[in-house]
Image (cartoon, rainbow, N blue to C red; front, side, top):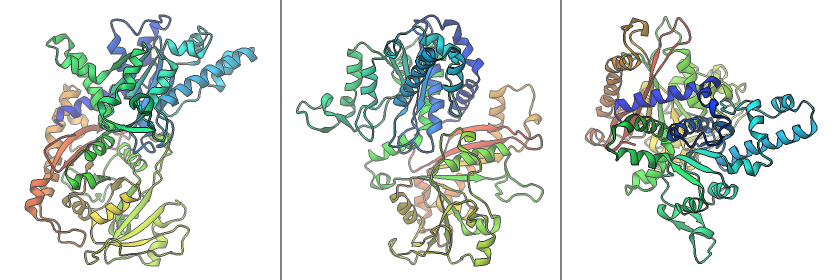
Length: 566
């Protein structure tokens, strides 16, 4: 993507973050008694707003929803949010059923308190409304005001809109189709942001097979049948992606700002689901290597502007505390964390997640495993007793692997039971690619590397990295920039000083010959130069919360093997 995409995503993200403040919803509250307020001149502005909230809710499920996409949903009546939900865990209920359950529980609690309690307003407020780390539900008084208008939940749903950040599923998998539930409840409107990219889904026989077979494989066009069925029932359906496409074909300039806002949100939702979209894309590739790669490898790096990854003698950390907390969230959303023996011996890191899920805006944390890579070195017993990573206090699953090119087969493995409170296995692999294939075969698909420069280069130059997440302190404190610069100009100034240097640094690494170590399989420099390239996909400024710290720049770099951008 171009650098401009990063700015759009950052500005959109900033707007969405501000909506967590209840006062941000106030611009819509004047219409709470107007049942048709959302179907007026500001139709699409309202839709984009609520889809933005659904997108924020979706990120709460980032740890456990994978390999499903992250999806959020909000239910709105007359510009009052009366239900919300997100996909919390793979194999469990999706965002739409969770939002509907949230509304159902609230409405039933309201009826119960109204019928049994003299002071039901206070009782409803205290006992009924529980919120996740991020919540956009209306307050108790507004919910009561809405609920009082309806004799039944069904009547309320018939007059409400459900907003979903991704097209509702319409196939049977581990759960029933969300479209079937939406159809049965008969919402007034369904608004979703992006189409589901999956070209082949299992479609229920009632809607796809005249032979009434149990299930069939249907193409993308047939998959839309459920939505057509919803339209035929009288439900108003809007897809923001389709609406944006229609606007882009229009020559009327008055739509340009609206289109920019919508496209910014769509990019943000697709970016947050980039691993899901990439996996779907790989399934459709004819290249056997791309089809066979079923993991996503993130390379996390922190360095100074000169490229050094060693902490200065006068500093405890390279990056500020906000960036370090951001890294904790990365760890919480990856199943495997890979590091090297030298990093463990030299830095003695914990490599754990030091915040509860709620403080990281997550509903849960991945079941994680730490992988330590070794060659001829090993830990002695004295070292193990002093190293944090082996401490039983943190109850972390730690596995050690040996990378040895002389080992011809990846199945030449020897498991060892060590005297510890947890099982550690020692396995031998001929190269890093064989190791990653083994890890992903155990359904551990999101892998992050936190290691020193040599191991980092090995993964990068072997063509195994999908994305680099790079943190770096700004070479000049923000307050030293021209005070007259607005936010966009400031970002442009920083971009010219930092972004190109960071990208050039990694591109030069890809052009180098592979390191002469036993962690590489020594592919030719010419092939590497032709096959890999770095692209900026997003960046943001992470401001310091401590007065003694500098602001950092966080850069997300996609490493691709062709010129197509995702």
